Amino acid sequence: MIKIAKGKRLKTVLLAKVGKAIKDFKMIEKGDKIAVGLSGGKDSYTMLLLLNEIKKHSPVKFEIIALTSHSGNKYYEWEKIRDFAENVGVKFHLERTEIIDIVKEKLREGSYPCAFCARLRRAYLYNACIKLGCNKLALGHHLDDAVETLLINFFFQGSLKGMPPKLLAENGKVVLIRPLYYIPEIMVKQLSKEAQFPIIDCACFIACDKQGERMEMKKLVDEISKRYPKARMSALSAMKNLEPRYLADTKWHNFDDEKIKDKEEL
Image (cartoon, rainbow, N blue to C red; front, side, top):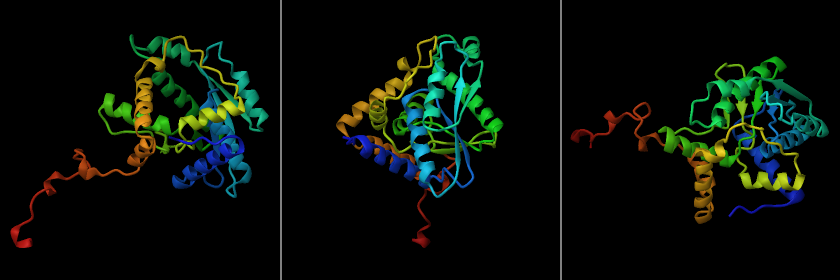
């Protein structure tokens, strides 16, 4: 069972976990200008708050700017996001897009829009980073997101692929980082509750991942963790401890070498 601290103690624990992720995966370097993806959800508010705190005290000098992608939905309450960023002293940029129209036009019948929408939103965020002169984009994916993504790919996509803590974008111009990589969702929820973040939803027009594969994996992880409290951290360790010899991918394992040596060599 994950023990949850409260108040200043909780914030201290979260800052330590973010600091460790930054150090372990070399997420932030001197002179970085980081766009912090701010969606209006608990995860992104947590990330902005913690990164801003680290920025104030870090000997490594870097800049951050809050970046919100507007889907084009008139009900999206982006003003609340702007006010939050400005209240904590972070510059804010709104990137207007036509995501909602693209999803309406291109979404296949019977499909959930969230994954498609996320890919479009990330593409817009990358482009916005370039316009703003940012070399990195921080997203608020936490430990549970990483574990769930690993299981989704394992059970539904047939691949051992997860959610890396740091990744160079395909355009080669922006590096994606996930500073909350070591933080379980329950801690994010606790901070959100204590800080009373102004949570808004995406005002989506279609039922989304709450009925899809991710929600199924979320339930599965919760059920397993009730029986095995260290399951989340074990899954995280697995993503950092790949052993190709015990898998079946011929790109990483030369099966021609799996044979008894010549008797004269024994």
